[in-house]
Length: 595
Picture 1: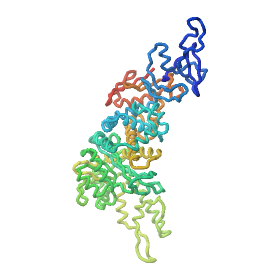
Picture 2: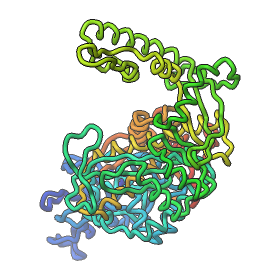
Picture 3: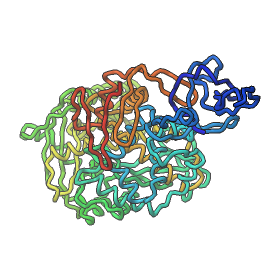
């Protein structure tokens, strides 16, 4: 029996309340109280026609069922949520035909997956709409900020825009993540990587975290930054599109392997899954080794990487910038995170590291150099005073490490003492405020281009911040490698949802986690009807049914409407007081304000 999510007045005659267990029902007599001969009927036929809205005998309204409309020869109206069950039995909620009312975020997550193209690639790879809808629904739950899959069956009705994911339970979600087909995952990435990469630059980085999984295969125990417990290490490698911020590919491996040691394997795996050869990989200096650069050149991949300070030949170039400063005419003006402008001297040299031909881009920041020189000489004077008083270098984090390296021991025995090496000090002074980048010569990047792309690699760090928050907030609950594969893949889908939404809200809010959480909260305060062809924003004054209680829909603010429109309509096609037609991959979505 279906009790519709609509309210009607309780009839004033021929009805009575009937208690069945914990539930209260409204029954209506369907026969007259007299027989044809005028005698009184002792057992008149009756039908349950609804349930009181608050479950009280004093209620004046009810949620009708099919009997109410059949007895009155009325067509069954379009319904939102329906409460399904029999009198005296446990009832649950499921979809009824027609519109579905819920917070705006699930609808926005659905649209984000369509706009990003991920949903279509999932369908194409897995060829199972129920499996894909279930994965996307679970990812939506994670993307909304929830930290567990408790009450998932209830959320599959009230927080779900994927029709084939109805009735997904927590147990079913755990089973799904444990049993994702690795071959289909490979097929998916063969479709997704070239689509999401395009011809843009890809930021690549690796982060490590510990897992308390009991059966981690091939895992070595170790420590990550900030941990004191010896646990199995899991390393998460991620490629992200620098222009869009959308994650492109991930892989993970267990054990205490350095980032640079496993780069070859990760790159080869990505190429096996159709990583385009015309993209440029952007990596920090932790990935820069002679073997890695050789491997990238053998694969004919373009790259921009940071230069570690351990390469002596580069160190000489950096030290010479100060002497060339007056002759360097090429400058760049950059905007820092604080909003201030920073001027950099820069130039490019051809460079050969052993047998590897590279472009070396050298930079010196005027402001940073001035600030660091002040700190350097301040630390130098403090070291001199400490040596004069105690004959030892001072301890403490306030002293620059480079300054301590400028002092060397001279003499033997009692005459042994610390003295300042002027040549070493001058070398450090010359390098203050300088840094360098390598790039592939055939890419022919200028110093300005290389620096711009290198700065954008921070998008990968931003994605890691999101993933780490999710992973730290979620109990991994895994006991083998396949469970980890499944959970990481669901979180990858959730990350695509988040990055797509964050990309859309840049005109309203800053693109960071705090702004994203505010956007989610705002969207969850908007109630929408989501149909096959349109989203209708509900205004105040309309009553919405959510599980077994009623509440008034809050009036959406102007900011909330604008935020919703910006996500649904990224091209700004909205005209005031008119309909918006948004073309997406599978269907048209229309946004309107329902009054």
